[in-house]
Image (cartoon, rainbow, N blue to C red; front, side):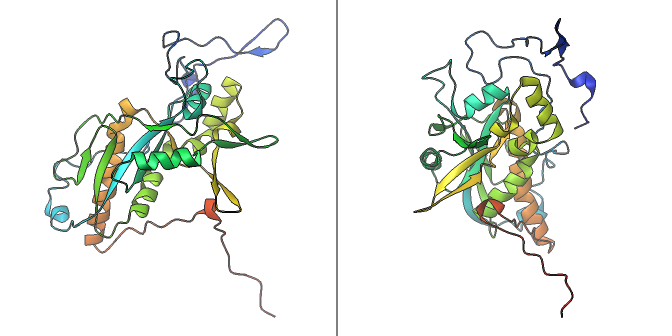
Length: 298
């Protein structure tokens, strides 16, 4: 995506008679009473999942012998998109991720994968944990309501999966038969990596994200979400990194393309003796880098 230019910034500031900087009223793009997250025109250019270089595979990529002869089915994964909040109960006071999206005027959703045959089981876990329900305010940790009301949302791929792909696009999940050797957790981490150009936490801390918050008079810390995990007598607080800037009706095709790339890349590189080393570190879960000492020995 090309760098943002001054002409891309649709929110301009003005000064009043006392030289105070004020923002002009935003142009409404949804009718009064709409429950959409973004109801007014914002000039911010959102990043896309997969990044600007994302492109579909060739039409016969999964039919070519390089893939078809090497692929062996492994375990099943279900990619889902979820939102949260009590919009129907109190449309004038949106809560949860929908409320956050409304305040920050951004299309926000959680995207991840599960091995559960019914993704609602994973949603029940999110509700129990109140996933992303916390943030670090000026005076310490704060909690928002509505993060115990997660639900699956419809995915709208702009096309069908490529012929021969072990992928099936269903209304609320994308079913993937992972290749043998690719674990669910490795697939999930690689999915996160490829979605990360549109990750909320990273983007909100970027110059573009900070400008967006400044235009709306918001503290970007509120958008860096956290989850508290009870571990018995203690509790671990971790970043909620699976929140993305995502429009289900426009970005469903990009999500499908990312999934196809992960499966195809794993099989083809494995055949070539270049199996992807999709490892990761987990600072959220207590990982600390230990560097060998460079001091001379006595």
